[in-house]
Length: 160
Image (tube, rainbow, N blue to C red):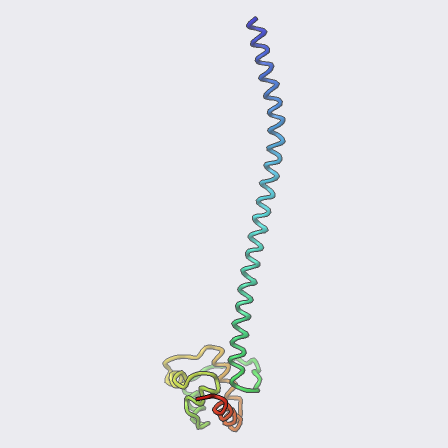
């Protein structure tokens, strides 16, 4: 009797293991597929986040460039920038301002900068940014009469 009971018990355990193995095999395949899909979604999310950051960075840079372009081209007038890179020299700035017979404040109005900043540039205490150097270069391209007319125009329009 014990042989039949132990044989029956062993057979039941073997059949149960076989059934469980078949069930688990399907679950393993589904789990592996889900892990693959999750990894793919994570990679896609990382790419989208990277693209979003790049887009935000470019939009911010364009906004800054548009702000600089409007502020640097507005005070100079109708002179077009030819795209030539400009160099800055404190001595040349002082000489040009003296040649035009303008005060530091008036010269500063031409490039939307304070007179004190112009004075500091001429003394070599500070240096203008590349955008400001371009604006100074555009002022140098203007004729002396155009410069004086622009200063008069700015003086009449400002409530100083």
